[in-house]
Length: 406
Ligand code: PLP
Image (tube, rainbow, N blue to C red; front, top):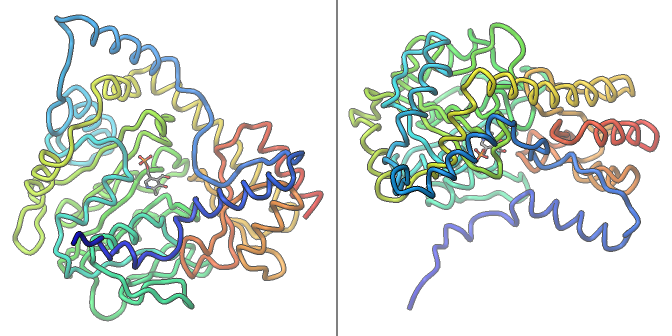
């Protein structure tokens, strides 16, 4: 008899955003007149930049002519894109990363959830708390963890590294036995916090000393506005010896619907004497057929002079929303952080409300949707995430409503 993979049964309830979607649907059914503004899920709203649209059209035409038609893409992705990434994202910032170390994919979610496959199921994992839920859930699905503590809202066999107001929402180095795989994400989703270079360097040194691998999610690096904040972990000395990095075109260039990302695995990176590059290459070759040619051409357009200028404007648009949210809430007396180097604003709920109490109150009184901090981990309780990805008009209206009605 066929048996289901019971690792999936160890996952608690629903994916956070499904629960939010369900609650919003129920509210709208009960109040069809309500004009609900969504500042919850981290999806972009601005259309693709003209340079990208131009590249898409051109690539579509190429697919229609025998001389320029493309079938399966090369396993690692097209060289024209990997070369641009290596030059603009890495070498220009002094990082020693070559095109051959870049694996093109259809986004960071797949890569940061699939990467655990090339590591032993016996490896222990450490995550920030609060955390992007994909890291933990993908490990549970793979059978790596599964002892869920419902009361604590956390897995017993995962090392949660609290990110609190006291540590600037960036975790301390773990005490005691070192975890094997360490997921770090900066600029952070959900807190919008960043890690300065000296602190990230401490993590790199720690990982090298303990034989741990850092899985560094830099999906939001394009939002960094301040100096002295690394855009890549490879800006730290020794990171080639202990780190894998994930990047995404989703928030950088509005590709959430188009789908494009990449993973960097240094050619000489090893886990317990085994090189990881060939394992990921093998996985990529076996289980994946690559991002579409058309989309990789669109990705290439992000690096042209016009493309870079247009993307910069788009990010500035969202970061102006972040400023509106941050300043609006701060002047209304909320305790807020994030929003300066990231499109996320992290606020402390008023009157010690739980995150879900605040969610319900915000939805019913202000008709604004955000994301409860507790959905990202136990240390997210009493916090709430708003995103800067709405339209400017909706962002202004949402903040006015919060100030007037909450
Ligand atoms: N990593 C983090 C931290 C994210 O917040 C997201 C998306 O919200 C992703 C990865 C996924 O990005 P992609 O759209 O490239 O799959």
